[in-house]
Length: 210
Ligand code: SAH
Ligand code: MG
Image (cartoon, rainbow, N blue to C red; front, side, top):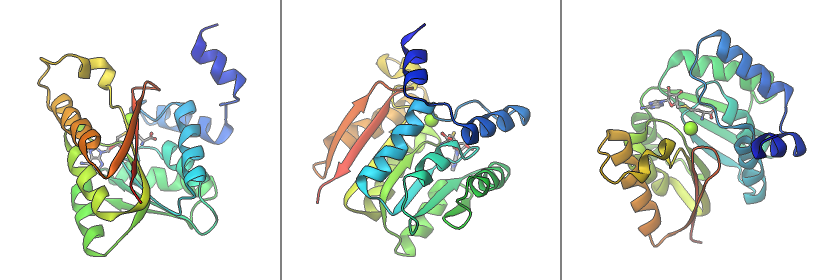
């Protein structure tokens, strides 16, 4: 048995609701890039521990991470999820509804940059942000997240290792360059206290100072 399987089985990461989402995604030929079960559980724990009530997700796909985030919310908490694809957003919405979160989740369809600009204009505020969409825009997403963050807000990001491509300093792919910029801004911002973890494809957690 390998360590991932051991941890998966020992910590009971199997979950019928989430497994069903993955099965449906496979049937629809959607990319298998949802967060791993263990990272999903970490998202739930982080939202709960932070006591977050207004969660922002950037990149919904099939709603896997959305369900994990929503599970961490109290009954008055809300999840705002941004997704480029109308088809994915509709599919994610139905999965969140089936998981019991129909009243707590709102989707905004279109390029996340446009949705974020609208949210700023509307005066939206968030106490938990999960960035998991197109990598070249991560640094832009961070700027918007900071504009709408409350003191103590957690800003998390998936895929910060980019399949280890980030380790090659000569790599100039748009995703790698974008991720480098994001990590540089995250780690050099004096308002943020951050950590990078080797879970999944690399996961960053930063906290906005109070
Ligand atoms: N968070 C999801 C996985 C997200 S995969 C989970 O773990 O369950 C990345 C998602 O970002 C895809 O659904 C993709 O359609 C979306 N995306 C890509 N570019 C985007 C953009 N410019 N604006 C909003 N969403 C985008
Ligand atoms: Mg991801």
